Image (cartoon, rainbow, N blue to C red; front, side):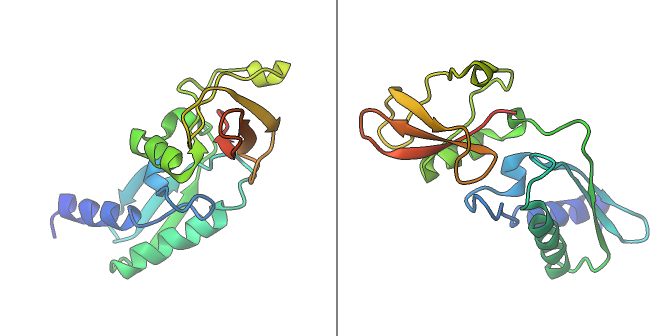
Length: 165
């Protein structure tokens, strides 16, 4: 099989791997796939960067990457984790941001350089339910460490916000 077809098959397999914490996002939506290498000995290496260094979902993501590749016929696999450059929410795909909002999680602000949280402020976030920007932070930590908990002041629904980093 030509090399481009093999890489296409590998990439299609990786597109079936979802984030265990946010099951509507694929690992491609998250932007954690740094590289895919098909070595001359047939081994497939997938290079990933965790969303943050303590992310508990990374082990399950590695297991799911190997399983998806093996299901596609690639028996020799390796997942390599690199920490530099550090992952940033800027790597989330536009599709991933859309999926987050539809799932009820406010996607991160476009620029990850927002440091207002350090001073107790936050930018006006859009409620993923009613789209109001009258929202307030309830807690710096939401359902997972990478999210903050907010509340809409109009519809009164609580929602997670995928924090910028």
